[in-house]
Image (cartoon, rainbow, N blue to C red):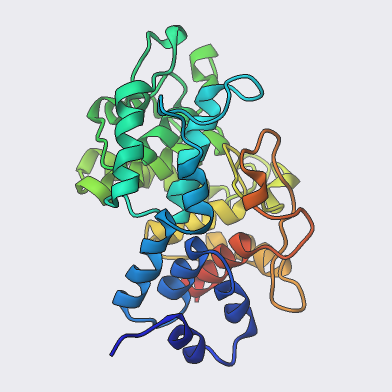
Length: 315
């Protein structure tokens, strides 16, 4: 018997938020089926396969230029459009083995570099800032473009307190939550794609402690909030840190929740509206493809999906 999206809806007939999430683009539907329902794997896989030919995923793939790049290089630099379009495709869950994904990634690998400023380094070899390189490592791992050199560079840049900071090359010895979450996501993606190693696992564990010791949002020295903006949720987050991004990372990394995440989870719960939705609180400057992320102040499927699966993890 062939199962369909309607079967997933019937299995969650008493949950209007799940129905609302399923009434969406394939890139959201398949993740809802996988993470929030008991939909059979073959149905999930069928829904995921639609991303390359329908809706938002197909739209972004159609916008790639013959030279492998996205955008015009004028209103937004190519490196920014390229990186964050690929990040969006990864967040959507585009099947990296699909024909259209492989064609797009082949164009990037053959043609796209970081420009003369970085010695025309190939895209998947990254540049110099760990916040950027963490993103690039995650993309390379997801799309099976392995860079051990990039891993070694990031491991060598970990600071004594356990995190990373793009300002380290200018003398900073304290880590940045923004940079650290970008690098953690990259290292986790690398291990998920190519297998765990003691060096990478140990680095991630140290960085987990950096975040957890600070309750994901407080200064270690005084216990004060570091930045109230971190309780405002954006999608895509670009390079910015917020507590939902941190919690969703910890869930993905299968970190067991403990008392140190309780405040962040409580904040996330407080952001839930009376009807069970979460809003898009903010859109960061220079967001590409903002039409795919929703309207600020409105119920948002991306945020709601991420928050619901964090709640499942935290129970």
